[in-house]
Image 1 (cartoon, one colour):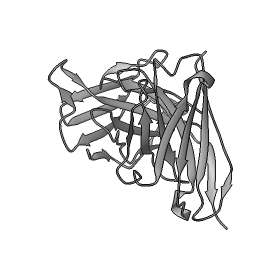
Image 2 (spheres, each protein chain N blue to C red; image 1 turned 180 degrees about the horizontal axis):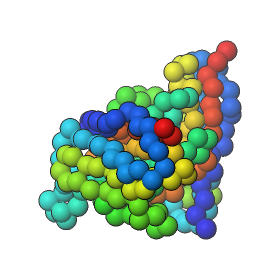
Image 3 (cartoon, rainbow over the protein chains, first blue to last red; image 1 turned 120 degrees about the vertical axis):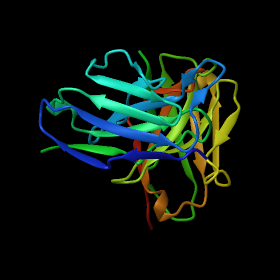
Length: 113
Length: 117
């Protein structure tokens, strides 16, 4: 199974700050056939189901604000949230869909400082 | 409008079998895959398995011996059955759809299942 390692596990921020969440996979998620990275980012707020933010490592899902930026390739990926807003306080998960089982990172909890 | 809704018993006794249904709307199960993901209280997400649009299935190896996913395309329903439940199977169970890309994009609201006597 592909192991997804996320860091940090939690992050305390003030509104307006820029934050970076890291995700590392135990094997490359870059498929040579199409040069796409099979990596997604989700946001989960308390009491809600996960919401897809980013797929193919850097493509924003429709309706997701452009302050959410995904980057990286191969085994190392980053979710950057610029100018954090109060509504962004949530838990963020990375997930690989390169191969089943589609494993998730352990999550990063974004909290208010 | 794409919708997925999980349903099933809120309480299951240890050693019994869990049966959940995911009823979908706004898309066809012949064109989209449906995944099951669970989340124990206060913990992270665990991918359980998927039924492809073709009807094939893949399971998390940790659950494979206990888990079965099937569907009734005509009723737009996907079914999860997991036997020999233990307290550690207490979780919110979600179904989510994906296209052929494999990316789970729409999720149901989830159903909380407690395993307790």
